[in-house]
Length: 304
Image 1 (cartoon, rainbow, N blue to C red):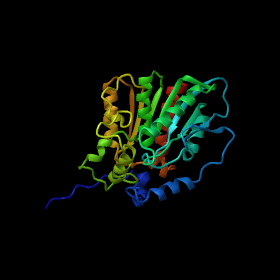
Image 2: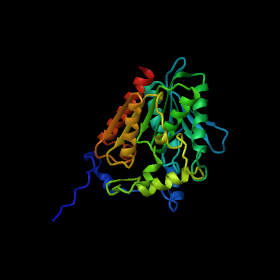
Image 3: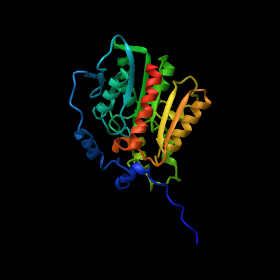
Image 4: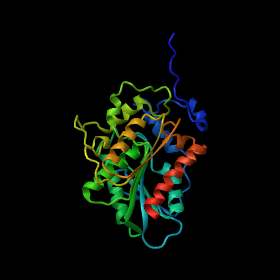
């Protein structure tokens, strides 16, 4: 009798996640999921938060300034996740304000247009406009800037890093938190979705199909950064992902290629962590450690 290999276990701090769904995105439930994001409790508006329209329909950028700063300070463009089809910048207010105050930097979060109504390149263009706005701000040191994001936001941040290299914009860091990098992951047939939570192959397929609608077979690298043939000269990177995340393999492959291209890249793999664990179980010890690692990377790159 053959024994079936046991599935990977959740991290001890994250065992409650066994009750979470495997996937949350799809054409039938998109309206509901977007509504959930809209009603999520967000911190009360503060005078230091400025909302600036980007001139592209509903797109805007939320700017968070540090409590105490003198002269131009470093800056971070932080891009929200949501599989390219949902999510909002306001949901990131707590994190953005924490980094602004703790690191003494300006943090801007773009509310980019979402697919499938606005497929590539609209979301990435909105993020680029937000980066240009951030660079032009008089209280920002344009020579000390980073881009970052989680999930789809991480994929957009990696795309921004590619555009920044092409357009001669210096970046100090690309902070890629379980980034959505490779549309070809949707073709894999060897994925065991059993241990996954919140983002499974079906959700991933919907997200990529929505984002790349109309692109055709030749997917440009800024849309799916893992397709970039040459990674030389990109900004230093920090890549973090859980071992139970659908993006685990593509993220580690991208990190390996960055290092092979002589791009400094720090990698953090959290054993037994699922996609978005640090958001859903924010107070878990492993989530706090994961955030602390990101903060250290930002501090080293922007503040020194």
